[in-house]
Amino acid sequence: MNDSRPQPSDIPSDATVPKVVVSRISLYLRELQRLQAAGQQTISSGQLGTLLGFSDAQVRKDLGFFGQFGYPGVGYRCDELIRAMRDILGTNQPWPVVMLGVGNLGQALLGYRGFGRQNFSIEAAFDADPAKVGQTIQGIRIRHVDELADVVRTKGIRLGMIVVPAERAQEAADRLVAAGIEGVVNFAPVTLALPPHVQIVAVDLAIELEQLSFAVTSKLAKTFGEPPP
Image (cartoon, rainbow, N blue to C red; front, side, top):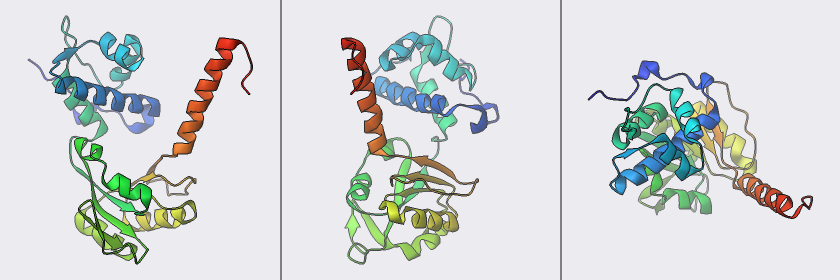
């Protein structure tokens, strides 16, 4: 039986794939991994879409950006589609990550086991607070931020996380860029200025809650025929 995975040369660049499609690929991957762990071997686009609230046409369209998948009369084989999505997302290889900022949120992230399941590992954590430097949290020794560049170079790390207060975030970003980091996840509630060759993803939990409150308010307004407050 032929492998359904696209070859790396067939995977389009990020410039041709909408970000929302990439986000849905991550959702598909999580659901497929859950199903595989439960013993399910195959799934149709309709079943996958129903589980996540999408249409079967949307699932097929999203996957169509990256190649042809599935088998007539069978649907998708979970193990093959999982491997294909890992190829697409680049998580078919280990990704070491550095973290700047080891406050309450940073310490919680150090203990998050979900990173490892997707081939990410926080290899080093840094802080400028002398009270934190030298501590070991979740098995990781906290280093002084001045050691960042040496660690990034020695371990060949390309991804970084910013978990510092908003007023220190740009400084942290500049340090990561100077150290050679190519991709940044920013948890600080501020917009950062980064050079074009550095990719960034912003995670603002307050914005996510605002989106949720909008959805709930809009739903209530439609139900009762009243304008949102």
